[in-house]
Amino acid sequence: MESDYRYYCRRAAEERSRAARAVTAEARQRHVELASLFASKAARYVEPENQFAR
Image (cartoon, rainbow, N blue to C red; front, side, top):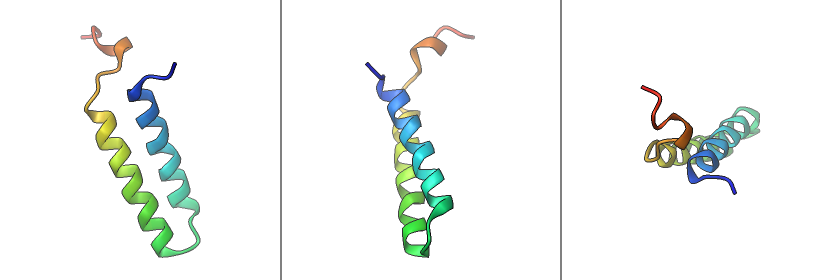
């Protein structure tokens, strides 16, 4: 099962891609907002594989 961290990172990347391909300014802005939301949610998590990499 996909972790929350990976899900939010993937969704942020998808929304950034959709923003780049958006036809209207309104659609582009909405995708940018969603990308920012998902990126901020991903930032709350520490990816398990990187947890001890220091």
